Length: 363
Ligand code: PMP
Image (cartoon, rainbow, N blue to C red; front, side, top):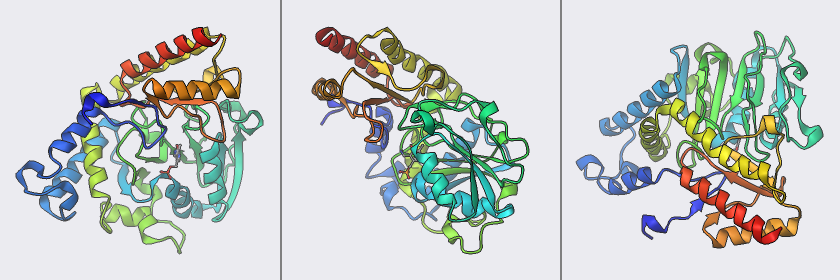
């Protein structure tokens, strides 16, 4: 398949990667920089690989603006393993934690944390099937919580927090899996940030964790070594063989991101892309957005037509026209267009045009 045969892939994750990144990786697949081997074949302790690792980490630190108070970790297991790692590492301080439940993944994280301590729901959007984000005044933070947990972008329901919750002295922990690198982050406000990499960062197989160094070191005694933030910090994420190739791919994505103007540049680009689709939804009599307007995600645009039959027709015809993975998550129904950083504006424009044509043919 040549690069011109590529379709527009709106998958929620694993998801589209920049074409230039894939081509770059392909070009050095069998012989990285005259080493005579693929990055996949290198020892993680070799100097050539350590250079890749260090450059990727330094680029991430610079692009995200990670202060020296915080450490970047590359951890196995994707985002879900962090649902366990977070309480194992952080709940020990008081034995309690607060969770904002604004979607499926924060609900799963909250249930996992209950195994390790006392968990309170500080706010929830479940009453309206997660189509909104609770306001600051609706959040009840417990003064004795070890941390406050939320998920900044709800991949399934298509909602995104537009503000950082104010939790006083209680450290903030955030799952940024589906909007990291799309908006600037004030890392100093967070105790811990984590993200599964398979949306805006790299192929699947890893989570990036950004941890306030002061919070590490008080994990529960039975915490597996590979889930201990302190062990991972002390070994620079190399307690065992790290996901070497995924880290290399992250490095390439970061070089690409830099060329787009970094995260600040991406913030402008992604807002324009999202507006194209939300404008179609707002002008339409056939399509409607699922999320409340002030909570709409710029990464995952959820919408539906007037009936499930028409939803299925739309998804089928969209696929035939070259737009793949538009079916909504099974627990939300309808449609979802995931327009992560790597989705070109032309792809979003083309989808918007297709939606207008579909409406004209099915009104
Ligand atoms: N959190 C969020 C916000 C997600 O979107 C996902 C996956 N789509 C997860 C957690 C779980 O990620 P993983 O499959 O890497 O465990």
